[in-house]
Every structure is written in C-alpha cells, then in structure tokens.
Image (cartoon, rainbow, N blue to C red; front, side, top):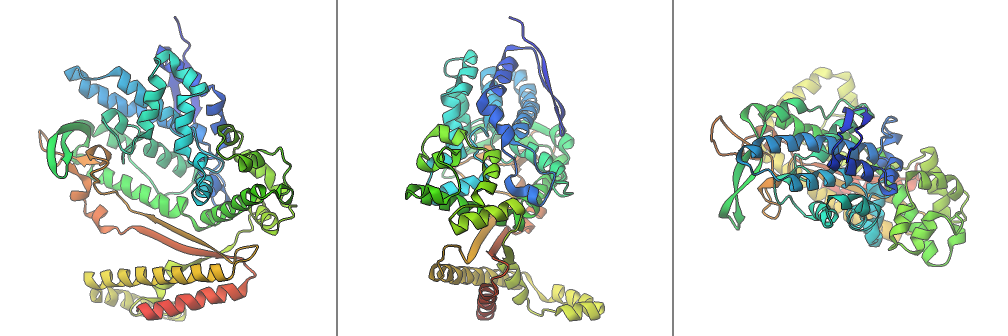
Length: 498
C-alpha cells in the first residue's frame, strides 16, 4: 500500500513532515479526527493574550510541535540502541503517538478551566482524564487501530503514568521532554518575550543515552537507560532550566493573566451553581448552550467536547445581560479587559520586612545613598540573615492569607470582595523516588565511562535560585474600603513578623 507524504508549515519548526510510511499515515489520520481538530479552537496559553497580544497560538500547533520534537529525541535513542540491537520500534512509535495526542482532553482556556474542575470536583474538567478516555475509545482510538488492537491503550498508558517507565516514555514526560522543549520555544516566540532562550541545537548535539542506577528505599536494583547530557552542555542545561523558570514568573504566572483566570473561575462556578439549582434563566444563556449542557451533566464526555475557547468567549456578550450580577459583571470584565486590580501581598510584605528600607523619595533624591545602602546591605546580610528574612516573609504571608480568608468569609456577597491567587514554582524538581531517575536531567562530568549525576548536584546556579512564590489578591478598583482593609492587614502582619 502506498501512502502520501504530508507537510505542515509551522512558525517555530518551519516544516513538520509526515513521510510516506504506514506509521506517519496513521498519525496523519489521527490529526484529521474532530477530536484533534478541536485543539485548533483551544489556545495554548488561555488568557495570556490579554497581556501578550500575539499569544493566540493553539494547542493544535503545540501538539504538532511536540510530535516533531519527540522524533528528534527518538532519533538519538535509536542511534544509541541500534548499535546493540535493543531499539524497539513498537515502543518508540507508542511514545511518538503519545507525544502527538497528549493534550487532547484540554477544556476551554486550558488550565483556567481545570481550576474550576478542582474547585467543584468535576472529574471531566481534568484534561488528563479526558485525554485518557478519548484515546482509548472514540475517533482517535479508531484512527490508531491499524497499528494494532491494543496500540491505543498502550499510548494512553504512556501518558497516564506518573513518571516515565523507560527511555521511550521519557521522551514524552520528564524534566527534559518534547513537551517542554516545544512550549518553551513556542510560547517565547508567540508572546514576544526575551526570556526563556534555550540553545536547543547544542543541547541535542550533546545528548546521548547512558545508564544510571535505580532502586527502592536507596537499595540499588539495577541500571536503567536514560538521556544524559555531556559535560560541555552544563551551561546550556542551566540556561534551559533558568529559561523555563523565567517563563513561569513572567508569562504563565503574570498577574493580569492570573487575575482573568480568577474571574473566569468565579464566573463558571456561579453558572454551574445556578443551573444546578434550576435558575438557568439567570445566566443569560439559553438552555441549548454547550455551557449549560455541561453544567447539567458535567460527567458527560460529549459536553466537554462541545466546548472550546470560541464557545465561551462568544458567550460573554450574552452573559453580559444576565440577571445574575456576578455573571453579568465578570462577563463584561473578561470581554472588555476590565480586570480587578492586583495587590501583590508577597511583594508588599517583602518591602516592609527589609532591614533598612529606603523610601521612594530617598531613591529619587539621593541615588548615591541608594548605592551605599545596597553595598552595605550586601555586606551586612549573611546567609543566615537571608534565611531568617525568607522565613519571616513566609510566616507573614501565611498569617495574611488566613486573615484574608476570614475576611472573605465574613464579607460574603453576591460578588466576592477579594479574589486570592497563590502560585509557586521551583527551578528544578529534585529527585523523587516515586518518579525515578528517568525524570531527572542527568549529566556526565567527563568523557568516557564516567557515571552520570543529577544536574542539581553540580550546578551552583540551580541550587542558588529560590522558588518563585506569588501571593496576590484582586480587588474591584472602586472598592477603596476593601483595599484599605487589605493594606492594613499587610502592615500589621509585617510588623508582627519583623
């Protein structure tokens, strides 16, 4: 049987090609399914385009890019294992197919939709659960069937596992996988940010396959093959981890994006609550709208598949005329980008907990004093001082959070007085026994047969960077009373924890 070669133009990878062989023909058929085509209508970065206008790229393009990148990684695996005749085409193809379909189950506005699911315990709002169902049973499963009766289930198993079980699966899910390598570059390109630069060609040219020990409870059982970076790639590896870390701080956790997500969460939660209580007429939507169908039966897979970003964004104008105040107000805010104002609690506390802070007027009037202050601070603050300051900051943050939760409970209204946002991201996940060495970034210290080590054990950069932590509240811009209350709580807890 002859197959047709296919090509797709991509802004990041240029040409993504599908050669004229059986496996790639099947992958092309998977892409043609309505379930995969639906990803065209789900933005990769959700509400990020309210900050970065170019960030309108879809999970469809990202999925193609992950598949393309996964093939590059798999070629490295093949080049190594072919020498010992250990390369397994079936395992490789299973992982490559998993790379292509790993995002099938995302709902509208991606991770923002999942937050609604977590809050209301909606199983079908979990994209991993939905992805698993779509691969095992449906159009995608039928499209994958020519590769074997159990192939679709094998693909789903690769995605479902908590950590990679072999080097093929590590291509799909690890701290150096095709997913991260694509979205880092793609999101940087489409947002226009200058953070997140990685030297992919150099990383790949220094990537090989090596053996590392594994076991349980620190008892070695044997060795397992995994990706290993050569010693010349240490700085590129650090730049990769630092770039990903910076993208979280500047793009994924941007205060405006997160503020929109909080409004979206409250909006959907209120719609579901009203529908469940027989008040659909207060939502501004008719009974046949996909969002209403989902609220009525959130366990129905077809209800999820009927929703995407365009369905929700198109409903904002209808919901703007809703009888319910919250739905009407929040829909208008999301449609017109009239977000709640952000108060960065952690930043405010950090400024108040500085040992010898300079006022803004001093900074403006006496730059020399500022310079002298910074120099003195560097010499004065020992590592113990810094540790104590961070502990005080964390303690103050926890106290403020508790008081704000109490305040929000006391001031319950039709529209919340405050919306709270917390986020945290480490530059690198240290070794976890449950996920195993295949999840780590391993490096060789020298040429030859030197034993690979975890990059965290040799990188001063990785060990020096503290986790990024965000703690913010969002307040309606005209609500001066609530803002003053929040500011007073911050001031009191900073004084108490100083």
